[in-house]
Amino acid sequence: MYMMGGFGQKLHDTFIEGDRWTYLTNGLKITLIVTFFASLLGIVLGFLLAIIRSTHDKTGKLRILDALARVYLTVIRGTPVLVQLMIIYFVIFASFNVSKIFVAVMAFGLNSAAYVAEIVRSGIMSIDNGQFEAGASLGLSYPKTMLFIILPQAFRNILPALANEFIVLLKETSVAGNIALNDLTKGGDIIRSATYEAFLPLFAVALIYLAMVMILSRLVTLLERRLAKSDRGN
Amino acid sequence: MKHFGRKAALAAAGLMIAAMTGCAGVPANTVHTADDLTGKTIACQLGTTGYIFAGDIEGATVEGYNKGADAVQALLQGKADAVIIDSEPANVFVSKNAGLQILDDPFAVEEYAIAYKKGNSELGDKIDKALDELKADGTLDEIVSHWVGDTADSVSYTPDPDVERTGKLIMATNAEFPPYESKSGDAVVGIDPDMMQAVCDKLGMELVIEDMAFDSIIAAVDSGKADVGVAGMSVTEERLKNVDFSQGYATTTQVIIVRAD
Image (cartoon, rainbow over all chains, first blue to last red; front, side, top):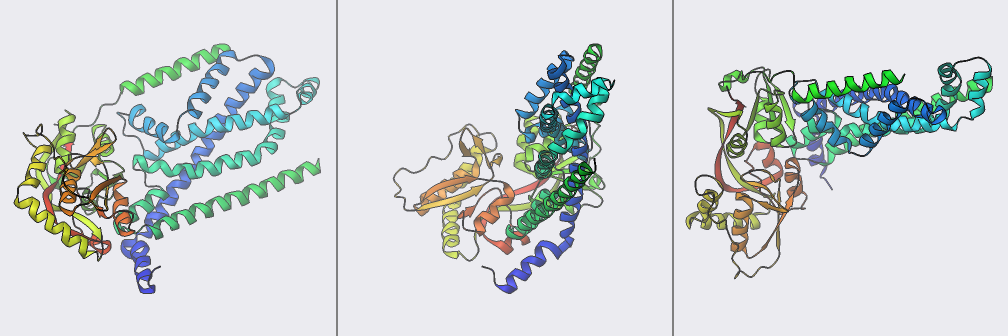
């Protein structure tokens, strides 16, 4: 499609001219920071929500917290993450000049938590009730049974689903450009807006996301193998 | 545990209310001339000439929003110190938000033109000829004065019903840029759509408008998805590498919007 000379020129204009490749490397850094901390927030809040909801399901306690958790899940899962991001940036933090990275971490973390919560809850509910009874018969309290007996088994079962959630999260952060956060996708957009050349910046951005997801998948496979090994050791 | 739940809910509600009403005030305006922009945070629409100019300001942090309106929102909320944007949309934004003002320093003067596929001089010549005629008979002035200034309530351009139309002219635009183009219901309205309708009446073609992101317009014209790009677009060196431009049809200035003192 391109003449060789023309293609070389476009490569030069897209990446070399004015050090434009740094838009992609700096953008990648932001994307990874946002994804990492949003995942952390998602895991912590998601596990909390899941424990509240499954404790209510199993024991009938925590009625108010369970109701709050349900509302949270309904609202977060019922609205697009881009709208949530804009609401947090332009409405909740309307008169605060907060860091955009913080806003993005909050938006994607709070969003992810809702999905993590349902994944973890499905994991907890999949563990046989006999395990709770076994814990109780050993004299362990309910929280200790949950922490030391139920969650470790649940975690192994839900690992593939959790990994999937974080792959989705990594790619979902690509809408962060709407609050003028210079993430990886925005880096490509900035290059595109300067060169008016669509092919190279978009493919470069796509390849970087693909590489990140492949690395993430590989790490999860390794972790799954580790957990399977320790299972055999028991 | 029940007790804890109620307390947590109360705390969360309190936090929300505090955030919504805004405990922290928006900082006072610190930009009074173009020179004050050094080291400031400047919000722009990504891909516009304002964005390119802002990048040349020493020590300034340039934030590229997808819409001019989002950049203005960020300015209003104290997330940015200034917005650099074309003067006509700036007037619209300022007229709708009491807390804003436009600095007297114009930032740069430029001319809007119609982009078409590189090398398609056949279309380019036809457009230039049509623009010559529209300028000569006063149609272009009428269109502009309908959308800006005191006669804004007069009737907008109406397409000539007697023209025989063969073929379509696809116009790529970004309907976020009043008064040049904005959305009214499902239609894209403004100076650019009216002017292109008048051009199409001269060419004997049917006008089709495609609304897209501003930074996609040149790519759309370059790849043949659209015949022309008309979006209050000025001629820059980088743009000329990918598309050709007609003669200019409007002169505009880049201005600086800041919060009112």
